[in-house]
Length: 464
Image (cartoon, rainbow, N blue to C red; front, side, top):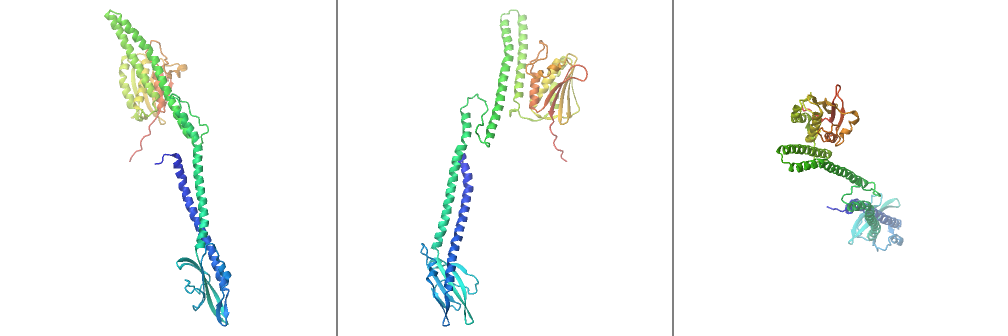
């Protein structure tokens, strides 16, 4: 297979042009043959008519005198041989070669042209019939004139070769212009290649189309779109690393201080207290690390590393409620699921959607006081699956409802546990699933209602 763009384009050009040159040359050859044949046939007919005009009667017998001008018509550099024959309708030979290969048809109304062979050479022959009258007697005279075909072939070659040379020159000129044009027109794309090759590894600035041709600009635009996506991914990764370092620095410093303090203690009871505090800090760090990883996965969830498929939110919600039942029981919170659906199918990643519900319900349980109520609802409305998580906790003031989706923002007391990542994770997962999220207040009483809408998966056609 040819890898060179120049050669491939040359082939695309050469194939139709070669066909065109072949057809054009064939037409030129046919035209040259027609022209040469017409010239020769007219000369033969003029000579035959001139000879026929010299046939007459002398003392009751037909005679003919062939004028030199009748044969001078065929003078040419090709040195063609000329033959003629004058024969009466009773097969009487009046003039010319008796072995001349002519078989005139005395009933013909028009001149008859034939091509034959005589003395080993091709011969073009015309037979012309003339009527003679003598005292009321009608006689027919056939004048046949033939000429060898060297001059005709020379005329054909002169015309055809001239056309062939023009076609070859045209083809070579087209090839040269294509090679030169490709070399000139490929310079902008080669400049783009050089710009990419000489870039620093960490450079993610868009490419400049510059003088690039309109047909090639989509390539640069596609590269720039890829650079934009890569830049966004790198930004997410950098932000994740910075957030993780920032959030883990303080707990690690606290744990280190507690370890140093414990090494100086001799009272077993005090050491046990410090170890319990260390264990609590370790659990907090584990929870924070898990949420940071979930947030990173949610931000990168548009990639192929997170396959999507049919997910039944009803089943996922049931599993999450089962996992969090212990926390609800510990605070004596009424945790339940309200729905009339038998299934709630959406398209997404089951693990991420499970993390979304886990964070929403966990947040509701953490901020709802003891003996409170948290209700998860599922319904199908206008091609959307609507998920609601309702609690009767303190709620969120209207002026900060948008800020709670920011990472590490907390609308809670300083002594209340939490990382400030729960709703940020939820929003990333919802957006990656082509959904929407909003915060509302209950129709009665205090609390918060989190409403998530996700596109419902189309039902398969019913087979009957």
